[in-house]
Length: 558
Image (cartoon, rainbow, N blue to C red; front, side, top):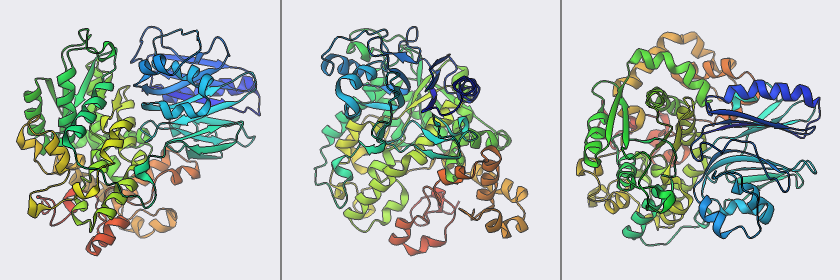
């Protein structure tokens, strides 16, 4: 996972802005520790911090089109780049690398902005044309890869992979929205990702063909095994990551780049789990690893190590959302161990709950229409929560996280299924994510396949969340909480834990607009507006832990 920082539409001194860009790009070097590149002229500065995953030897950026002079900086992976080279380019181009990113230059040259609709991948990129100063910015369909932008007092535009690179350069910083592009000559944001299943008032009526569903996910995992460096699998012990791991293990011995004709460069597959000693997830992750034959690594952490890491976690995740930080802290600690073993890419299971209704409050969905509408709402917001956590917690240590459930082709299959097939009916033996589990019957042990969802921040050990709350009780006094609405009039924290996280966040990011980048309210809590509509008893719940869903979670009273 790379980092980009671009300075565009320069209004000030280009020499001084180049120096400033180089200095601030260093704040992104954790995302791309393998190489630093820069290109500049009088109107633009384009910086790139590279994590080399594909074409390690020749894929350094920024990339320059030798024929047009256009310059490209990308944070991302284009999984269908070989297909695009063969089928979507009709003119000769001066290819310089085997990189998955270079085709973007030539696709833009031949097809214009709409070429982004052809891409299957996770990306955030800038293309700059020095001939007329025009520039083009785009972000992937779900916002798996982060992107921020803002202008300084003179009107110069800054675009960066993370907030930390530009918060002190811009008057106001905003999230560049997922599934959009911006062309400076047109001067407007365009939403390019508009799947039929997300249209207002639309409820899909597709059947639940388990074979089609299974093949679509297997194809997505296979696409995302594109890699020239050692990679690994994250196994939480839940059904989502376990299915992804099982599919990956099936294809691990061959290179997907050669249609599985050649042996893989790294034939031994490694898997990782994280938790406190005796964590609920650990034994199940171990069971999955044994089943698929991976070399498994159980990473344990202590409560004190995790508490000490929280300020760094908030700095890297760039949020004060409670659930994201709770889950992001163990992931951040795990990522450091993964990096120490020489692993540069991992497959993870994010996105399944938003596609199949896996969160426990979906038990209360009153009908299929509301069930589907909530899935769409969750997917629209996912870039602020689980995508943010997985991407930034891993990138903090130079590891790339890939998320096959959010593959756009798989999403089209899964989200076109009539939501009536996804609804939860415990009295009929249909638990959450029933059709996904049924589609992969026999791929993983039944103990995991039919195990109830455990939120990651719970699964690493129930005492983790309890300890964070106790820590916040010590750090935040009752009088501080009583005055919380005065210190934080916008998005006032409802608990001491939220107050603590918010305080740390504002120590890192002192631009007032930074507060607006974090969404209101908890991410998976029962107190979300939809959940309250489904069950008014949840209105008073401020704890977003899965265990808080009384009457649904098996360990709700622990």
